[in-house]
Image (cartoon, rainbow, N blue to C red):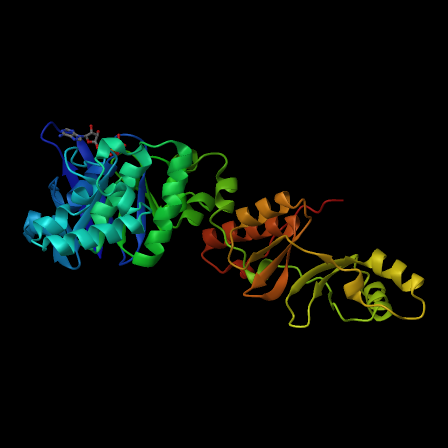
Length: 392
Ligand SMILES: Nc1ncnc2c1ncn2[C@@H]1O[C@H](COP(=O)(O)OP(=O)(O)OP(=O)(O)O)[C@@H](O)[C@H]1O
């Protein structure tokens, strides 16, 4: 969708802003450009909408060499969001949001309808905010209007230059989450500049990590964090990259342990006998539809079976509810956080309503190590054999 072919930008004073840029952003993909100040991220982005012309190479958008496109027409195909928002201070929120439709000659009724729809989409009630001026908004609200304006004419491409850079960390995280939700619906092709590695990792389908004027690594967030291509990238992503990687590594079926399962209606004595035979300390308890109910310990079952020597009673009489669960595909970070929140030694993992296994801290650690190794060797996670220092 956006393709850089050996692109360079040299300024007349000899500064090489970027060189040797060759990469592609696929349709519907969100690529973050991340790196320290002055490494050439903004230059890269501005070459896509021809605010800056490359001195070497070419850039194709939807297969077309943009050097041949008419710049104004090109820019209308691209939403552009910047940190300072660039909202017109003397125009209302509705008018700001309608800027491009206005330029495109849409009727007033259609423009307003579209602007209202977009404000709604970015979480601003048009009845409350539509007639305000930008100075009557908070920083976060202004950024939302910036995003709404960029989306107004439904462009296939979005260029975003530190769009959430000027707001505090809490608002920023909120805006990031909202944007991710929006993007999962709209599937725009997005080039997103940031100097914040956390932001790059959270938002990007892939990340381009910039060194001075060139890309040092272009990979998925998990690979950049798990297998940095150089010491430069390793330093840039930070010593806590293992922790950061937790948030981009999903729980897979192969990560799970399979403890014994019992059903609520199972007879107490049968269940106690099975547990003793398995040597298991606890079991997961499912209901009649094989959906998660909770858990029960072997000791509880054994005691209860002794007390109810006549064989009366079921597992359901002694099972405890289990609130610590997550759907398959959730991140290892969510898993860890759920364990801590419930002070649980394991969490249940579900696929839809079906119970598929449990994740323990040891399995979580193993999953992380396997996924790092799998990325480094470009194999599937379940194909990785781990060498482990056994704890004694
Ligand atoms: N008009 C210009 N003339 C000369 N050098 C320039 C010009 N514009 C930018 N540069 C240089 O090009 C390099 C890349 O700048 P660019 O704005 O792309 O960096 P950046 O990664 O976006 O940085 P930041 O995060 O600080 O915005 C910098 O060294 C900058 O000083």
